[in-house]
Length: 362
Ligand code: SF4
Image 1 (cartoon, rainbow, N blue to C red):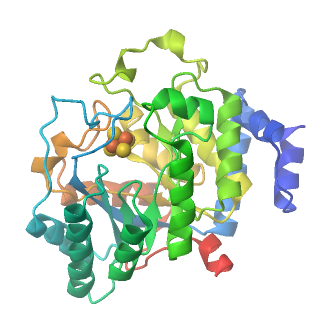
Image 2 (cartoon, protein in one colour):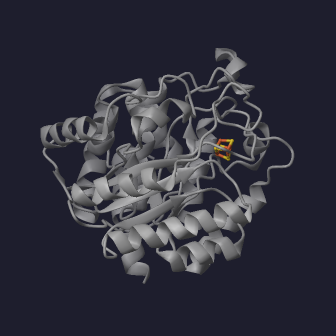
């Protein structure tokens, strides 16, 4: 089907199928790609508006029990200096976010499920909520946990949770993870999170080794089937100190430039899913200094500035050459404000910026 007919079908509210999604993802001609971006931006304005919402990221800890084969902070990477932020550093970052009128923060860490970790996070959530008089929204990105942990954190004040599936292809998932990591377990956690009342986000990596366009179309179908409120996805970036870091170009069936493909994936997600929140991730900026702005023009509406104290940032490298590692939070937000104004958008200061999709479901 021609792109224009696919756009019309999406506009009419009928879900796109795998072949139609693949048609959009494989557009190559400059005019066709420009038309896709134009349509995605039109849908964005109609469905979620022109405001960009900030989520200040606090990289709470790089200690992880898991061993994903692509990740720079995987358990077996002995070259990483491990840390957990002291309570004062987390509260100071949250205070920075409040004072700058960010609507919310994201607390992100490697995965740990011990009681010490669960209760530390629970206490931090209560303190952040109290210090901000309940105003600061809190998203968690702390991996797979028990239902009890999810409930305790929800009751302590978190209201959104980001758990990326990384790929919706069961076969590819197996190649990305050691044998004791379970696709079904992760899928089940997404359901648990929804049943606890969270606004749930998920996402994938784009242009992974062994990944095909068909897999990416499947990822978009998965987002719809899982009925999530937010999407956080970006290009796969290798980390040298991992098993995947040793793979070569011949292991990538998709030869397209990862930044362009990630931008197209954002645009197709916007055309297909309409009213969800979509993040323009730091990984885009790692490939192109203007990557995050390009993400906004392709339909994204969320930006996650890093507000972790700079001295801890070099140890939270999920991939090599992560940008803004030494840029302090004030410099970072100044650059972002300029970049957002340059693309003609405004920042939703002081607002949580929940996804309209979640609001409608409620
Ligand atoms: S991707 Fe997440 S769960 Fe996997 S090793 Fe990295 S931090 Fe741990």
